[in-house]
Image (cartoon, rainbow, N blue to C red; front, side, top):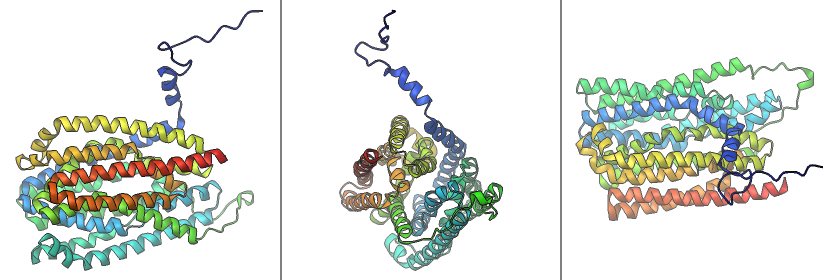
Length: 465
């Protein structure tokens, strides 16, 4: 009888059979979830790439068309309004994904309609709260940022755009049905409107008021388009119809109970605190160091976010995948998927950040002009912070999609508190560079905290499965 041949060794001496780089490459290529994540992210790439180019374009034109002081004031008014909109905005799209996914899988169309209705009401509550808070806060903002009466009046009018920051149900509908192609087309519309309008304002030498009108329209029009796209998709999918075959009729009993409201508040607070890291830095720099410093900080942040935009595309596309894995309790598959997605994003972010560090001063000079080269130092620190965030990008979506929004919230509260305290002291000691150091500290803290919580949860559930 012929003896079995020992398995042939491949790779370097001492390598484990079957675990060389070729096996790993084949395994990654065969990963259906990872391929779908990359595919959906690629659909967004065109829109986001265009959005990044348009954003740099309108910021460059505004920076050159206005004085450093006026440009900083434009940034502060917009950031003030956007921050309030994001803070009061319910993350209703997460409700649509987390509760809508199992409802559709189980053919509970009545429940799906109730979930959408609840999500829309959340949008309305958030919009009203945001508008009231934005208008009432104008006097305080004027005092904090040193606005004149005329500037405060412009900020008052601009604050009405906050209503259009608070619509998230439409986003959830498109993500639920994997219509990232529509999201990609819509996502760059606002930046395109700003680019065209800002170019016209630059050519005609318009003042601050004209720029604010253009930027306000750039928030309103894309929101209306997003609502129309989601409504059309719902009609196309025919998921709201009440008629079902008797064999598919399932008891309809979904309602926003205490558990649902707990998820809503936890997810909302968690995301709102996450956005503090985005908006608070600009506002704090403006309050502590003045409008010109806020302008430098905003340009630096825009460049770091823009360069890493291709990697960040995976963040919105991973939510539906994790929601599906959580719904069928595929914990081991979830762990492997998250590890691979994190590695892919982290390597990409580190590479792009390295390029930005090498070419940063040249980019600042070409895009914004000589006055903005002092933003290079803080831009390097912000780029490192963004890379750290992207290494950990699957952790928070996993916790939220798996019903662990409260755990994610606790980590975010600790991170945000540390960031605010660090920002105050470090800006006082090191000026604009202090803002960048505070962001790096916050990103490291958040990564460590989420990693510990996610690993404990996955280990516990994998052992019980």
